Length: 190
Image 1 (cartoon, rainbow, N blue to C red):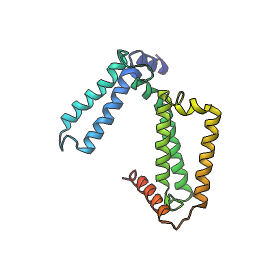
Image 2: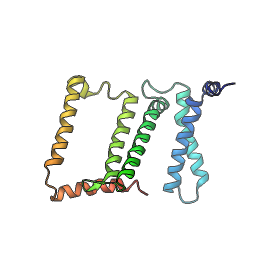
Image 3: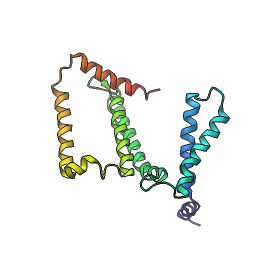
Image 4: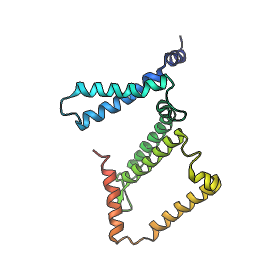
């Protein structure tokens, strides 16, 4: 039996359709419940039961084909995770390069980790939206078409860059904006 055959056998048993999504949802819900003490301190047994129920409530409709088309949570997870993994590797590599070159992660008066967190959040929303098929038939793309939408996005990015270059750095609004970005980045340091 080859190594590839082992994974094909696991796939035949429903590893990516049932077991891995269940474990992923179970672990995320359990870790959240444990960290937040939502049900109270020391309630590990209740956290396990609730996490298992939520994991099963997500996986069972997938196995029984009860989800509507393009709304199957397990398919969305399975389609999004490879791209999210690539995004996480890219972010870690960017932070490693920043650490190797300069050591300090501050940029234009704000925390670079805040900028990376905001960009990562937007990319996660984009990846999950793409997996759900939201962006293909969005109102924006129906009104303007793909080429015009691309031009509008480029103009918006250019406008943001021009605004950052020409803004008044001493103004109170600019400092509040960068403090907000710094605080957002500081949330991920703990």
